[in-house]
Image 1 (spheres, helix red, strand yellow):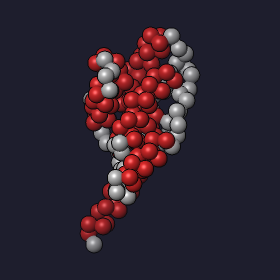
Image 2 (image 1 turned 90 degrees about the horizontal axis):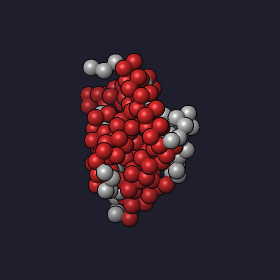
Image 3 (image 1 turned 180 degrees about the horizontal axis):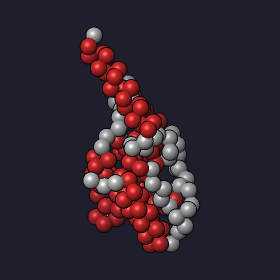
Image 4 (image 1 turned 90 degrees about the vertical axis):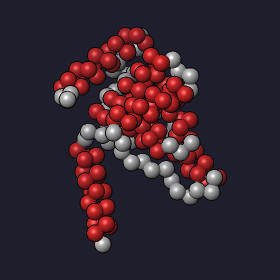
Length: 159
């Protein structure tokens, strides 16, 4: 199993090599594209299809997030190596809150817009995490929210 120190070193190494390859400063904070466009589009698409239910923003495992981003990138014609890089970046953003250069984050968001408009909950979740709107997977806030939801579900089942 990987330790958080190992993941932090790995994240910093990946950040510095990505920044060097893209010739950008790794200290530049990511700028979100449009904050509500994917969510609004997903809700509008669901309404048009006769579904009034909003997409679910439940947390999934970091491995599952990486697999879904990889599949979406390959489906959109991104070369395999580049698709794997975006999938790895998404895993790090989602799980431990890594910060990447603006160019990388913007391209990742562009890859997620299509699935988000289609109402894919994982894409909406990843977009919100990349914009800092939701706590990362491995944070105290997320753990508390997940525990509260689990207790509420157990209480509903016991009734």
